[in-house]
Length: 267
Image (cartoon, rainbow, N blue to C red; front, side, top):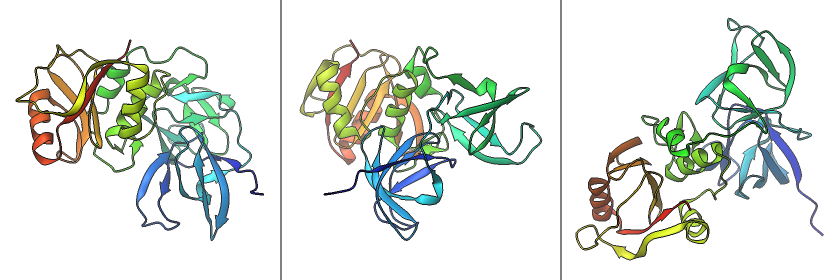
């Protein structure tokens, strides 16, 4: 009988989830500070298991984890913030914590809150768990414009297409899966279908009027409309998160990869 997985909490600035137990293995996704990783087995300083947030499997460096997993009290609302070694802006930074990272709050000293097992964080960059979430998830996504593309990334210093969507939605307390394929399946089930089908080619398809917040999917790619004509996505062509004309992006992706498969709108 297999042992129950052990919940560990990330207490490093970022925790890559890798395909194999080595530093140069491909990064599949990332676990942010305060999030939980369920370790099923350990080998040579690495732990194999799954992310508690979205059940994503892989290997993580056990040095990035602490046990037991504690209940977070605050969530980072800034795009990124420093975790300081002391409750002093002149103290040495320990690491950066990106949007949606969580801390287990301890003592308060002036403008800083203790992030237990990590350091000190400026209180103005945090919101208490249970406080109202971000009201406009697309505005959150727009804050990442210019962030470099990083395969498997979901941090402010680099993220991929589905990481951008999951991160922005999470800041608004909307859960969606990690990868673009499952994200489209989720959108098909829970959002309204604007248009869908195999091989929706730009020159041959009469697209409905698009709106801010519409999710647009291709095989292996996703982005969001910021208005009726502008498309926001993190992509390998620009190696960055960019906003560009939808038709231009759709034609380029269609030419290099495949026609789009669907557009979905939140009810």
